[in-house]
Image (cartoon, rainbow, N blue to C red; front, side, top):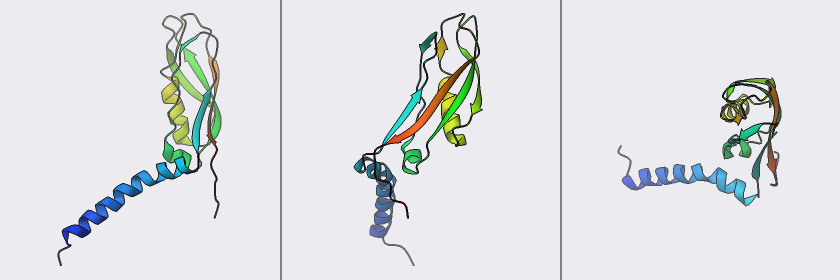
Length: 128
């Protein structure tokens, strides 16, 4: 039996609307993702980690510490090691990705430890 075109369109529309539902739901509840990072001495370029709404909706938050090895000549970050996990490997990866883009004044003492916190402000979480 062939599926009518109107049914295919209805299913596609439903899937598309559900994709935007979680973001709209978070906004209605006043949920706001907040990322806080330290600002060590010598920092000249700071990129904040991404905090995708999908993580916020599911309540993924945490606080970690990361050790940055800084190239003395260029001031670029050569390596980032996780000293204390945020509790979520995906949040750790987002933090490392951002921290690798940081830049310090050449000659900045290395290594440097940086706290990174992913937090959720506001909202009414209903637990079932």
